Image (cartoon, rainbow, N blue to C red; front, side, top):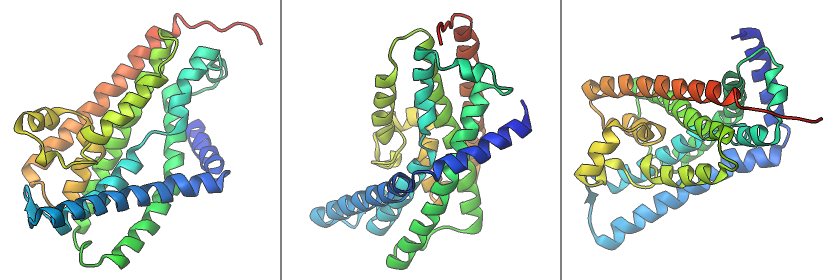
Length: 269
C-alpha cells in the first residue's frame, strides 16, 4: 500500500465528484431529502389512521425521527459508482489500466468511494440543519457521545456495503454479467438494513437473524444509537461484530481478487 498514492487518488476523486454539480446536488441532497420526507409522511399517516400513539415501542415522533436518520444513514453508506463499474472493467478488459498502478485495486476503489462521501456529508449537514430548524419538536435526540458512536458504526456500515458491492463486482471474473446482482442487493438492503421498517418491529425469528447479519449497520444500528435505543453493553457486542464483518468481507474480496486475476485475460488495444 502506498499512502501517497492513496492520498492522490482521494484528492482526484473529490475534484471529479464536484465536476457534475447538478448530479451531485440531486444524488446527495435531493434524493435523501425526498426519501426521508416520504418515509416520515407515510409513518405519520399510519399512526393517524390507526389511532394509536405507539407502534412497537416507538411513538409517532420517535418513528418520524428514526425514518429521517435511517434514510440519511442509508444514503451515506451507499456504494459509489466505480464499485459497480469494476465489473465492466473486468468484462471489457479495462482492468489493465489498474494493474499498472502502484496501488491495490480494492484500496484504489475505496479511496475514490471515500472521496465521493465528502460532498455528500457536507450536503447532509445542511439538510440536517434544515430538518432540525423545521421540526424542532421531533429532532431532540442525540448527544455528543451518541453522535460519535453513530459515526463509528456509519463508517463500519459503509465499509461493509463497499466490500459486499466489490465482492459482487469481482464475480465478473467468472460471470458474464453481475449488474443484476447489484440491483437485487440494493432492493434487499432497503428492507434488511432497517431503512424501511425498524428491525425491532419485525418478527422474533427475523430479528434473531438480523442480530448477527451485517446489513443492520447500514441504517438501523446508527439510527437507533443516535436515538438512544441501544444499551451500552449490547453496543460493545455490535461494535465487535461490525469490525469482524468488515474484516471477513475484506478478506473475501481479496480472495476473489487473487483467484480471479489468475484467469483474467484482455487482448488488443
